[in-house]
Image 1 (cartoon, rainbow, N blue to C red):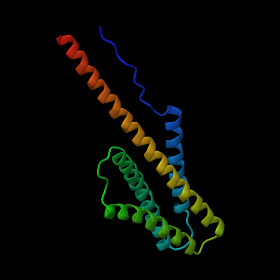
Image 2 (cartoon, rainbow, N blue to C red; image 1 turned 90 degrees about the vertical axis):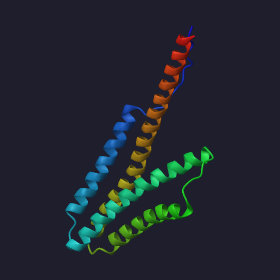
Image 3 (cartoon, rainbow, N blue to C red; image 1 turned 180 degrees about the vertical axis):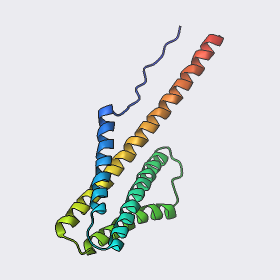
Image 4 (tube, helix red, strand yellow; image 1 turned 180 degrees about the horizontal axis):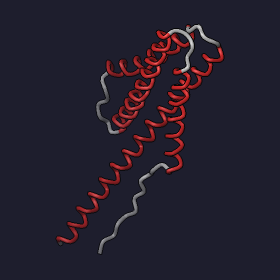
Length: 161
């Protein structure tokens, strides 16, 4: 006779997942609209588009780096090297600082700068939330697959007896 323990694997609700994706896509849309209609010089527009992409990718990398190092330290494994830590954190702060500097120095209306600034910061916060949500889903899927494999092995062992 088999007895199986109930194991709970935490998963985010569908409503949470929808909210995270809608927020991220809304932030992308707002930034895209702000950059597409950015008045001024083409060079300023190009700088800001590159800055937003640099910030976006640096935020995803930083989220992954922090999560990996948290997991490694909890499992007493060696985390990334100090130089890589410097590169990841430095890249994020450099991207944020240069983009902020570019935004402040542009010769456009202050209201327009405020819109771009708020939509940019909204994009960064949504990026961290999306990265966490995607990583949580991936880890829950891995846990469930491992559990199913373990249960299949134990069922096969019981049947073999």
